[in-house]
Length: 214
Image (cartoon, rainbow, N blue to C red; front, side, top):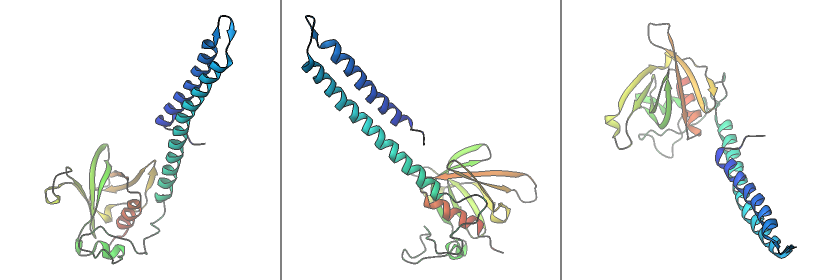
């Protein structure tokens, strides 16, 4: 059984607390001059049950939505040790030079060294964590950084990595995909991890990084 998130747990606790407090209050406030008035108790009990189950219902809705989100993320993430399932299929580029109605392959998606751009990524480069973009060309990966209102031509290049220096195998750690790479002429391996909230971009990024020009 999947664990509830914090919001779901809080709503569930509030709902149960309202029912418990209403039940106790109904008993305590229904005694008058040594007599127990069932109608007053029933009023408190029904009010507590209705209010409590509203919160419990909201808790269940959030819990189910979280389960759906987790399953979509798990199914969208490529599996470690395997090449992209779209490696030979048609994929869509967010390249502005491509026609919006024309399907393209990984070869054409990064053709003429025009970068395919993925924004809104959380990137970990070794121990450094940042919000960044991937600009992927036919032969290299550019890790770029810019503010929300900064134009693309002002983006700062953080790291340029040749595709031939990137290990084609990758690992999965929660929402992150982790590649390793080495700098030219060295044997020191570095970690490159990324995650994105656009779940279909995982497959496209892996496809493009594994598609190395001979």
